[in-house]
Length: 170
Image 1 (cartoon, rainbow, N blue to C red):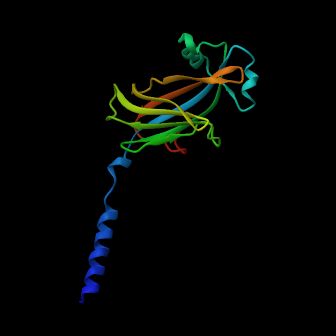
Image 2 (tube, helix red, strand yellow):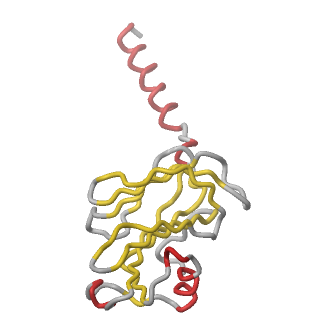
Image 3 (cartoon, rainbow, N blue to C red):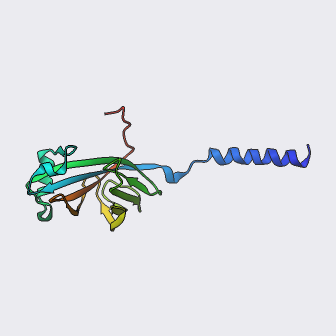
């Protein structure tokens, strides 16, 4: 075997070993659900035809905070994304629009009590919020967004441990 053949076989072996290794940063450690609500004291139809009514328990939960208290609420969109161990993640709750985007990244290991996350809210391609949130699983972080069509946008970010269910599972 000559030198070229030896180099070829060694490099081929190296490619095989490198492809067999997995990236631990791509491990899914949870699921983040982002929901955009519209709150108004005026006419709820201003939210548009795609806006959906929300459950009464969700409305009651939103109304508990004085700053989020409105007479009517509508859901404008939602997105559920996997949370990777070390990679940044993006949620697009008003797809196909890029009007509202949320970037999130885990800063600590997910536990049943608490997880620190880096969260950024982007509206109209401008970063309007950056926070290091200490999030409790199944307890949403609520953000009062900008004024919109006579009301306000409310962004809910909820963390759930475990891998997301596939679309076939319900």
